[in-house]
Image 1 (cartoon, one colour):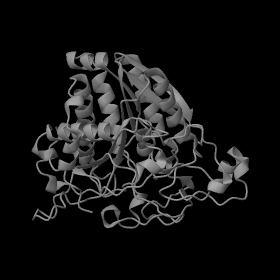
Image 2: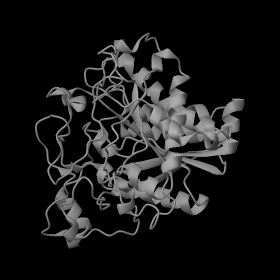
Image 3: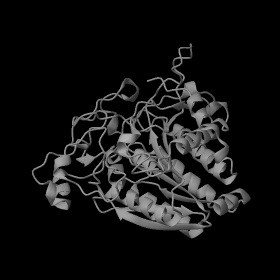
Image 4: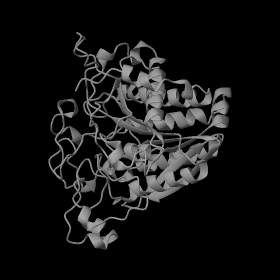
Length: 397
């Protein structure tokens, strides 16, 4: 536990998932804004790709029940690592760093992996009941310049997919610009718009530029690496029980219920099971008969309860705004294929955030992940009433 007594002491800022309804990049909502220029500070305190490599090697050498792998390489040739802990017949896929300027999820995921691979009796119980498969940093190229996107030019993309020559670039590809919101320092893709539940999909020029409610095209090697790992888990387990994607968000008031609340009381985390406004139009129940709606709501409740167990400092978890239409997101894609899908948007990341707060933000993620894992280990997951998801207060903004 970290030495922070009240949530009012927190001052979060970050970038949350924002729908892009047209080929033009979406502007941030009030909850997602941060002042221009705040992307320029150093990334001290966060994992860089070389550090992830050392951590993964350490886990493999010293952890119990640990196996590691390279599941692919980034566009700039950096390895993308996975860490597997345990051998249970339930599988949880944890992913962090898809938006590389939202990095506290990577810290939290490394902490959870270290804990679950120790010699304690509880960790042994977890390893016997559940298989944890984690990608600590899906976007290593973005971690170097500290930006949301990967590092990939449109020319790089056409070289991979010559059939796209002459077509407009995808709506989720951005060029360098002034440091505001998601303007990158180097050209790249928002990886969390590049997913598609059709794992055999091949990019087509006629589908460009696309839009926020349209499926992604697997134009990036990073998204394809995640897809390929998920495919392997599907083949091994039949169904990936739970998928969790770790993000950071901006300072948002805790509740939006019409009642008076302290205006500067920020939510430590927002979570969501909802990613598609019309799941049926994307094949839920037909092409994808295992669409994981109730399972997703159960997993969100388990995460909510896990954070509450951390004590009053961590109270005030909210639901992310429930009007998402992000067909190209990893959460939507894996939910359509049957996984209980959880978006975790913990506090803010680097922007004006003193170093001593990093641990608190990571701890929120850790508690939420362990809430889900514990419910699977203790066989209480299926007993959760999915309608309790509606009890989680909606985030203000």
